[in-house]
Image (cartoon, rainbow, N blue to C red; front, top):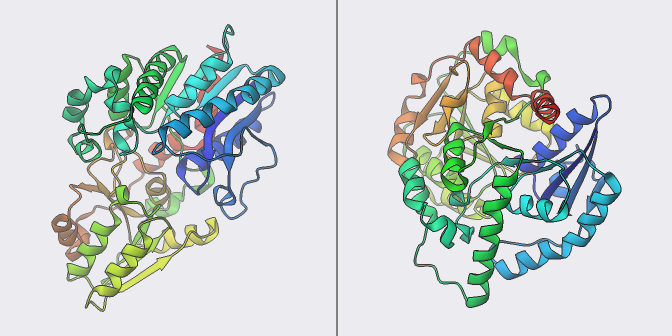
Length: 400
């Protein structure tokens, strides 16, 4: 079975990039399966300090683009179609996989008159990103109220007063219509949470299914989960993420500085907010222990995770890969209310959710011991989040 996997661009050490590499590796280990990865552009950062290779990845244009410049973004995607079609004819895939609504459009154009099924992994809706103007198009704008009723915090990423120039407006209307019908035509749509299943139903009137990966079987530390560590009186708190505004690391840091905690805070990651966070830390009169580490190797990251007492994420995402990695190490988690715990079976232990604000975080830092210990049930839930589980489910669905 041949699989063509299209991903827009691989430019950072992010969850989307890791997902492509890990699931494609798991698929390639299955006899009779070949995965071909195509991307517009790739950088060294996406290779996770050399853990992955770009040797067998086909680059379509070599040009990066941003949704902030809609005209250039659409133009770059249009340029890729000729080579994408050429690779489609060469590979003759049995399945097409992509990770965004926009890429489903390209695949539908590429496979025109072909019955090759498209499997779409819908990792993030347009309402999670400030720069995605699709939500202001005629076909999606009428659904904003329903989406906000489902997830009120998306309001911070909506600016209905936004003005687009005539060319951008027309492009946005056209691409939004194409996204709508492309998603509806996909054979399978997978999401990371029950919440996004509801969002897909609202936006596209399309059924979708829960399927996500975050770890390998080897990462599940069963002994640490069954026998969790005792938390010290000076606990070590850990944050691992891209330092972007939506991750709310500034709120966590401010709360830690205001708290009475005698513990330490380690922040691992890089991104546009790093300088602001370092300034916030230095501007404080606090003598608290705060450490910043840039993106590090997987081995060093594993050491940091298994050494911490509490892992914290206030991301507005419904699923956070690094949080699952920490859970697999038997760590206790403090997560934003956005994280969808309802989609885990059996239910997770050792996890607490809060409304992400400084007051709630400061209360936690003063008394983190309110989080229960991890439990045996976590192992069963984690086994459904492995890369092999995702690979096997893709093949199972493809054969139906």
